[in-house]
Length: 92
Length: 131
Image 1 (cartoon, rainbow over the protein chains, first blue to last red):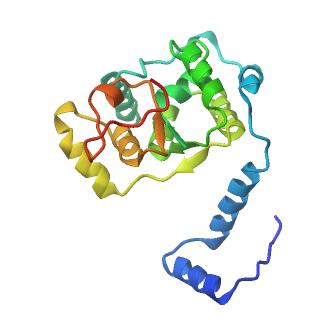
Image 2: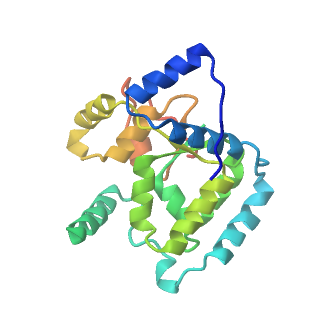
C-alpha cells in the first residue's frame, strides 16, 4: 500500500482536526475523494455505447436461467416490502 | 442530476425483467446525465440481486455510468414525509428519494406512486426523469 503525504493550509488543517474529533477517519476521506475524482477521468458514455456496454457486462457475468427474472414485481411497493421482510425473517 | 430508483437498476441488470427494454431506452436518453444512488436503493437492489454475478453486473454498470453515492436527506425530513403519507404505508427509500428531489435532481423510477400519490413536502409534483 502506498503512503501519500499531503500539505495542508492552516484552514484545511483545522478542518481535519474537526473531522478527527468527530471520529472521521481521514484516510477514508482521502480514498473516497480520489475514487470520486478518478471517475471523472473516464470518457462519458454516449447513447450508442449503451447497448455494447450492457452486452459486455452480461457476457462477463452470465446468469442461470432462474436468476434472469426478478423475484418480485419491482414496481409493486407492497410486494417488494413483503419480499424484503421475508428475506429478513429468514435471516433471523 | 438523476436519482436512480431500485426498479431501474434491477431492470438494467436483468435482461428478462419486464421493464428492461424501457429502462435501456431511457438509459440511452439519460446516459450523459450525472447519476446518483442512495444507500437505501442499493440495499433494496441487493435484496433482489442476490447472486455474485448479478451484483457484479450492478457494480460494473454503476462504475461505467460514473454513478455516485447519494447521502440520505436529514432523517427528520424523511420521517415528516413518512408521517404525511402514513395511510399509504410508504417505505423509506421512496420517502428519501422524494425528499431529495427538486428541479435539478429528478427521479428515474417506474414506481407509479411517484406520479399518482407522492408529492414533495411543499405539495409540488415530484420531478421525474421519465414519464
